[in-house]
Amino acid sequence: MYDYVKGRLEELNPAQAVVEAGGFGYRILISLQTYSALESKVGSEVKVYLYHYLREDDEGFFGFSTKDERSLFELLISVSGVGPSTARMVLSSMTSDELSAAIVAEDINKIKSIKGIGLKSAQRMVLELKDKIVKGGGKDASFIGAQGNPNREEAATALVLLGFPKAAVEKVLDKIVKDNKDASLEELIKQALKML
Image 1 (cartoon, rainbow, N blue to C red):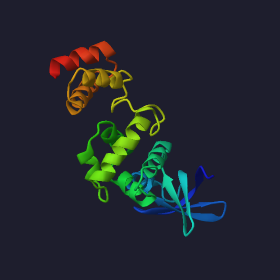
Image 2 (cartoon, one colour):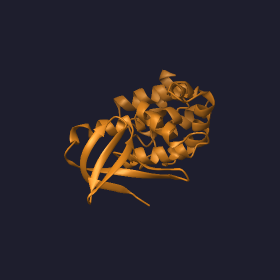
Image 3 (cartoon, rainbow, N blue to C red):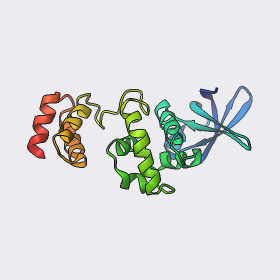
């Protein structure tokens, strides 16, 4: 299994990169996210995390600038009906954080706005990936909201159980955490109750 390739970035375009390592040139399919991360590094040494795609009639490398993006790619292709090309399109349309947030918030409309993703695929992504992302499958730590407050997810769950709409809860908590990143669980719930 390949983990990454480290070498000189010889060529780069929005769809692929060529990295020379050990005298071999590796043609790697990339997302726009990775393209943006590598754009200023043509001619320099880079490290690209790999996913080796292998089928009877097809073989190739998909490359990522971060382990988080690769983990999210692997989660996406685990969804029924989502192949590597579609997963790459998804990661080209949104950042890893935006996609994780949309899945956790069950924002079907945002997900299906991606080219190639219909209503059923978007619903399957939410259904199959939400718990995995919340538990840390798509990130190096669990997805705990855009600002990283560990109490945010617990506060969201409590407020939804109290009967508030999930979308409204997510929006209010994002605002509170943006203003006060270190808010305690109690502070988050009290402030959210005032705003809901």
